[in-house]
Amino acid sequence: MSKRPNEQNERIKRRFLEYRKHAKRLSDKTLDKELATLERFDVWNGRNDFARFHIEWAMGFRTHLEEAKSATGKPLGKSTTRAIMATMREFTLWLSQQDGFRTRIKPADADYFNLSRRDEAEARAAPARPAPSIKQAKRALALMPDKTARQMREKAVFALLCLTGIRVAALVSLRIRHIDLAEKSVTQNPRQVATKFGARIDTFFAKGFEEAEVAFSAWIKHLDDAELYGPDDPLFPATALSSVAHTGFKAEGFERRQWKSTEPVRKIVNQAFKAANLPAFGPHAFRHMLARRAAKTCTSVAELVATSQNLGHTDVLTTLRSYGQISRERQRALITGESGDDVLED
Image (cartoon, rainbow, N blue to C red; front, side, top):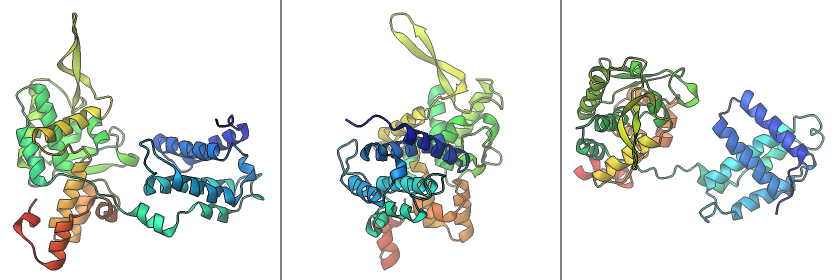
């Protein structure tokens, strides 16, 4: 059983998190992770005063993480270990600048929270990220029914992901006014749309998805003609539930509000791929799909930059590093020049 929380340590944690929130402008989600890291270290270290810091603590904590298990019973992943150590490194640097700690903690002490070069390289290595091919996405879309209003909505969700690779949090917060069918654009205004880091993102429909454009346009027309929705209404309204005696609730029409979470989108995407006898990809996989197509087909740097901007990245290297992976077969074809049609096609 761990010791009771150290009051002095708790005050220091709060001050550090306030600094990270207001000075470094980190999100609440990131702050929660950093708090969990500080608590993990504090518990492992027996709640000893941070003011008594010694570099042996850092070295011992690194050894502890190497032997630690995740919730599934497996060793911690290198990327997880790297994130934990990075937080402790930032915390130690910050502590070294605080009154009452400067004489005990030096900025260089934070370096003891670094991983070995081998582990750092392994943590930075991009993991395999499953994504559908263009043909797979089109097949799943084609098999989605659109007889009812709810089915039209679900098909439109899948279609917009095909066309833009928009992040799911942004998708569920879109309003009709953010769509311009004539321009084939989605304006992700951070004042109204939940964009990453609160950035404005101007997204345009990817070429080659005519079927997706048809399905998405049909949904916009339905909202206008049948639902009588206006520009400020949600693009993808939540399902309305009505009570039924002795049986609970049943779905009936829509409510003029957005989904409260991203889970409905994940279910729509998973089920669409499963219905097509394909792996149950998630919404984020569309971003990988579009980036990989760009890496494969773009003939100029400008095209790659345009794709990067369309995905909401400020740096094209982010697109290539995180999303531009190619298969082993494609790598071989490009290097050896021995390519078959099955390798080069989606």
